[in-house]
Length: 385
Image (cartoon, rainbow, N blue to C red; front, side, top):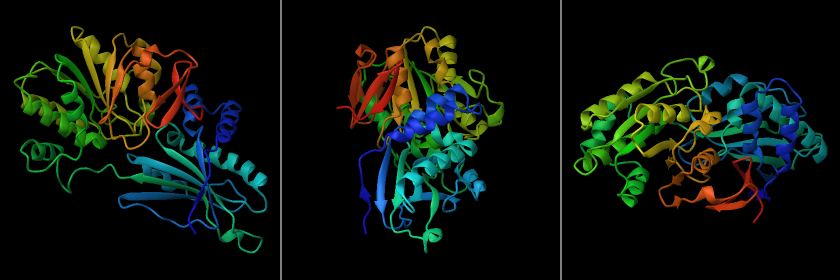
């Protein structure tokens, strides 16, 4: 029997927010980040069965019927350095829906306590799967807990180094996996003398190859570009990373592809991927301080990663042109916030999102298929037309 999808379920945000405010275990950033779960889809099915697309993988965080205790928390470790696509909360309506909703609040809090990073990305799809086939005889046989669907970030062939991968693209032995950056830069061929700040963690490998290929093909016309690469703290343990002092930032202003390639490879090899958030703002501030003469500041960012240092955006004193990579559905609202607060723009493979600065607090903005309301300078998903 196919799933029955209902309209988005918004009340869960208020459940989680109240839980966050009621405990001292959460920091300010965590409280802000729960906006990502302001919107659940509700799915009704007699019994849940695992079904995934080709290239998708999953982790099942198990709980028992009537319980919020996680039975296999070690499974969360498999998600490190992976791209999370969807989180499904599995529950049963037995003995009744109200009891199930109260229990789901506790289940969400338990997941937050062991894996708060899962709640920090507003591009992740959340859904509640209500199983209606349970009764007193079979309720313990149903699956309860969270199914976390992800795509592996692995882009290199087995045993291949980053340098070999980039060379394979530069010598046209393999085709690009994406064309976002090239299409944006072709649409804006008037951009010149750019300060290009690029996330160079492993998940960004195809896009790094793309920017290298673009530069190599346009060297004569675009030779006066400066590149700053960041990897979110080299091999530093996540627990030791400090906002604004994470490090792992390298630059190259030599006008030849070999120097830029060497700097990109060095940055990637010194990093480990780490957790989900990246030090985008720290890298931008470093770049603008190092090269103050550059006026065209371009950030090449991973749409599926959040900013470790979001709170530092207010220190940016130039408009930032943001090229979003890895966009499949929903734009990461943190990058809309950055564009709005700096007077910049957001660019995707298909569209230019410009003029955000003209919108006022409280206004509803339609971007793509989503509606956002500007609240305290942030773009918050809303159902309003």
